[in-house]
Length: 146
Image 1 (tube, rainbow, N blue to C red):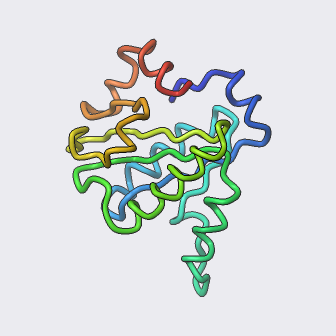
Image 2: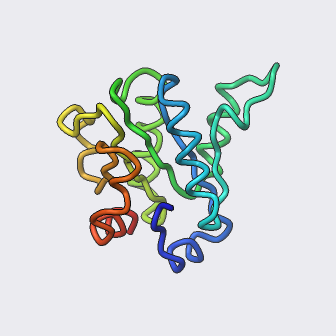
């Protein structure tokens, strides 16, 4: 389970986490969403929210606007294309709203050196060694979600 502190969840008031990921990382994003939900947050994940016929650009914008936080799963493809656009929105929002959280999650194959410059300023959760590594170094990982 992802160690979100209960007081953080209660501070967020009906927390909705927008989970950003590249298409090739969808299986990992689904798993991450399943780990987050038991902590009491709702997760906006495109493959679960978008329906046939939806104007997905508008739906993604709506999801980003409604979210109280963004979790960015970064796999081996890094931050490119639409993920880059979502990150830019989240960076702008976190600058204007100090309560909005942006939490990068480094997955297998990711390289922290390849993160966009401004994203490097945010403490990340390091899962590059897989999900089993998430239980190790709990204090650092909890700090990354503060």
